[in-house]
Image (cartoon, rainbow, N blue to C red):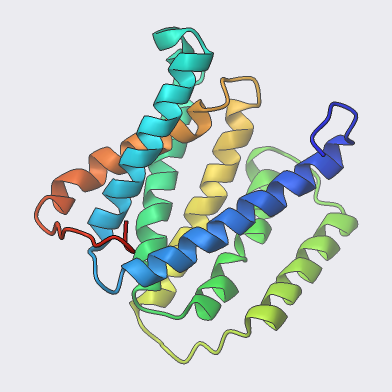
Length: 212
């Protein structure tokens, strides 16, 4: 499936499907956990696990500490800030509104990414791309069936997540594709942990086996 002969576009689509499936699972788990645990504890735990996993991956595969070097550190840190904000907004929003309503908003992000890429990266939209995004968003609305019956702060948090997701996507384009792969996840995970850990210490609850 991921052999060298795979067409780049097909390869990208497959990876995107895997990635967004993982996001959906993570959002569902967050929706479950936030009923019993604080937002900061959930984020700090995920950030710690992500930091350890990608840190060990980097050191084992890319010659120890040398693997963390990058000429794009500034953009990695900017993206880390966006991703940390995304995590906070998403988990917080899910504590207020149903998943269906959340997805009815968060999937506006591809359209915002397209708009920002035109403004900041001077890319051309093209009618095919616009129609594809519109069809995709319509499909999400049809399948998820958001009702928007809960008019609360969760709606605003979801829109904040949309703009942070879009900002993160633009930062990836600025970084490019040639840095060591784990770094794209390492810096966001590390910052997420560092920002949330101090708050998590004051709201920590020992999780049971299913929560772990």
